[in-house]
Image (cartoon, rainbow, N blue to C red; front, side):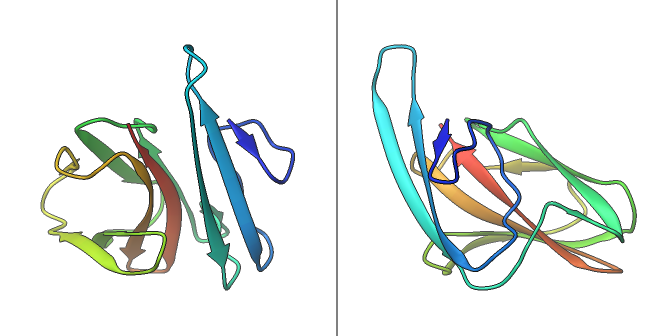
Length: 122
């Protein structure tokens, strides 16, 4: 993982309006690069709670755990901001097997806040 911010982790905290670019290189040296423009400050952590999305990267499904507050809605957006899928919150396993490989925004609405995380689909 190589971000244009210099980070080499799977996830970063977006703390300013900017273009963020991620290049992922696998063990064979194959690379995929994607980017996003963050229009407002978002974070996977907040004073109101903490969002855990796992596994990430994911192949067929992912789980969401919110450490503070009841989850009301989970939605997946393309990096262009278009809604791809919205899930009922009566489930805790979210299927993504039909999605193409790439990066997606996951938006989690709780009773107290809305949080975002990047999901990498392998």
